[in-house]
Length: 257
Image (cartoon, rainbow, N blue to C red; front, side, top):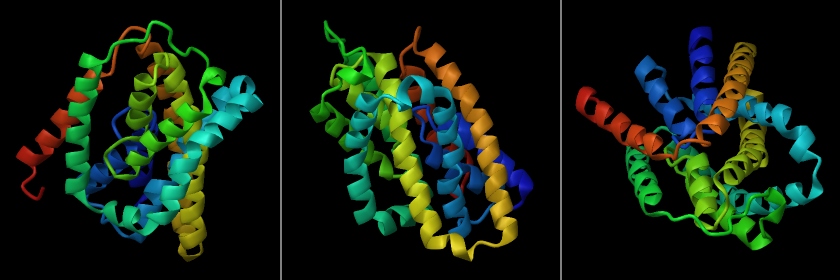
């Protein structure tokens, strides 16, 4: 793995973290395309550079959301199910990061679910329009939905957005709640991995992490703003179509898959 790889990974991470297409899945497939072996460092790299994308949320939302105690309590409540399950299944989850077929099938089936959900979902007459209005029970349920994203390729954003829409949240509200929920979720995942494996990284590897971090941060800033504009006029069906087409392309053009 070299600097060019780190920059490409950072771009992919920042562009896909908050879209319902699975950043982890895209990082795994990108590594396969570039011929970068799925060793222990790459698995840790794929987890840790997500902190760059998360920092973008902190920069964009700290004034309006992160100092609001009512929002913080709901974010932490939604985070609890994923934190608990993540600690229990950490080793099994990390082992799946090298499984291309798990990623491809998760992308494909997730795309089907996303399209079907959008086609059959009907808006509630009175939608929840403010994050502070989300009940703690709904926050827990959204957290349970997010837990499915521990499977590579499922997409944390897709899982939380579908869960929120199903519970009656307004589209912009659940998208922004998904942004905020990413902060403790990905900070905990990255922190746990660095605690377990950070001492084994070389100086060159830490430099690659920094490069990936900075690149993903810059790209995430752009993508967050773009997504908020996109959802004002569109649903998520285009992302579902993309999720179906991407695995099909890999299956039919890459014999090794």
